[in-house]
Image: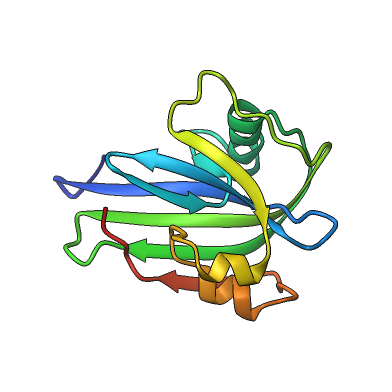
Length: 154
């Protein structure tokens, strides 16, 4: 929670990695929270005082034992709860890692799976934030895009 002008608001800054394999499929992780299960780009929250790229490297290492070797800013994605209770700003990077085979950390409780998926497969998935249309339409993803996502309730 962040306090703005004396009012607490739930604003989350998240970093995410778009990691393609040799077939140009995209790495997604499956997450279970509350009673729902959905897919998302690997990554996580930025801690205060941590740069975006530091946070991304830390999250990839902690969750999937992936070592970040290169990253470039790709997309700024925003998703706002229609009831204005939650607001997510996701900064997505095009990422290269040392090894393309993730290993889920034993201490990771919310990640239940992962896989590399084609854009055709992604179209049918519950992806959060909902960036499916952007990922599907942009076979060659250009850097520096802003994508607004509709909010998906749990």
